[in-house]
Length: 80
Picture 1: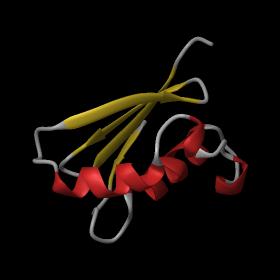
Picture 2 (picture 1 turned 120 degrees about the vertical axis):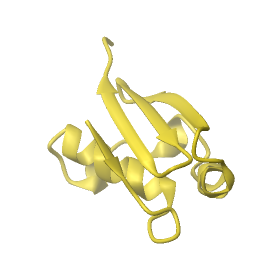
Picture 3 (picture 1 turned 30 degrees about the vertical axis):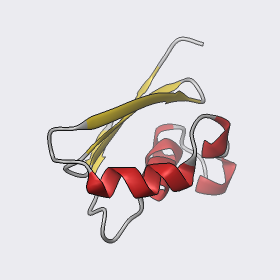
Picture 4 (picture 1 turned 45 degrees about the horizontal axis):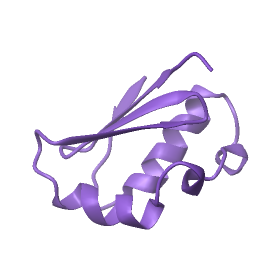
């Protein structure tokens, strides 16, 4: 599952939580805090400065999370 966001309107950390909530069919407040896997403030500072071809990947709550400089966010379930 993926979606494209405008980093000037939606911080990357918020975009990840929104997409994880859709993927898990849960309220965003029920998503495990991102700080368990990555520093959300660092994520919000880094992504908007990346070029469109760059990407960052991490695992969170049994999902592979990929973020791209062009605003795309993808989450895919992993075996846990």
